[in-house]
View 1 (cartoon, one colour):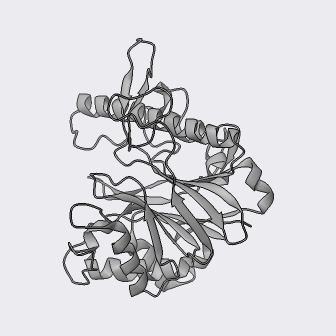
View 2 (cartoon, rainbow, N blue to C red):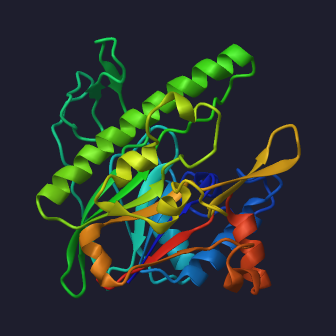
Length: 337
C-alpha cells in the first residue's frame, strides 16, 4: 500500500462556492501562479503519486456553503484518480482543512476522535482535539490553555487485507512570527508560537501513547512545522516537536537522520521564498511516522523532491509540476498492510 502526505498551498483558492474547480487565469494562492496552472500541476502530481491514500494538509474549505469532501471528490473525478473517496474530521475556521483522499477499494476509514469532549474549559488529560488542553509549559504553576486551530484528523483504518491501524493527520502550529516586524515583536511571537507548538505535540503524543498502550499500530502523517535549524530559538526549549512525537516507539528515517549529532545533508520537504533577500529556504517539515510494530512490514519512504529525487528530476513535466503545485513536496510510504 502506498500512503502519502501532501501540503497543498491554498488548495481552497481553487474552488468556487459550489466546490467547482476554477480553471482560469486569475491568481491562485501561490505567488505568480494562476489557478489554471496550479490545478494542472496538481493533477500531474496526484496522478504520478498513484497513492492508495493521500493525507492532504491545507485541503479545501468546509463552511456554510463549501464542503471539503465534495471539492476533493470533484477534483479526483476531474483527473480520473482512483482516490475518489474523502473524509475530514473537525472542520476549522482557517479555510485549511485536514482531509484524507483515498481509494475505497483498498482502504476503509472512519473518523474516530478520541478523548474527552471538553469545550473551552479544557482538561489536562489529552482531550478530544477540538477541545482545550490544560498544561503548565514552564514552572510558573500557571496552566496554559491550548487549542488546535486545525484539529488533527483521527481515523480508524482497515486495509483490504484486514490489517487494522490508527491513522492520524496533523498540521501543528507554525513557529514563524507572521505579522511581526520589530525585533521585540518577532522575539515574543517566536517564543509564544514555539510554546504552543510544543504543547500541541505533547497533546498529540499523549494520544499516540494511548493507542500504542492498547496495542494499535499507529501512522502519523502531516506537516509538523518543525525541523532542525529553522530558527535561533531552538536552544530555549529542551526538545523539538519532532522529538516529542517520535519518542522511543515511533520511526521516520528522515526525522531520525535530522536529529543525529552530525546529520550531513538533511532531507527537505518544503521550499519557501525568503522575504527581502530573494533566496529560498529549504526545510524538513513533512513526516510520516510509524509505530515500531509496523517496521516488520517493509516500510519504504520517499520524498518527491524535484531536485533531490532522481526519478522526479528526470521527468521534466513532473519536476515542473511539483514546483508549480505547492511550496511543499509529497512524502510517500510504501508498506505491506
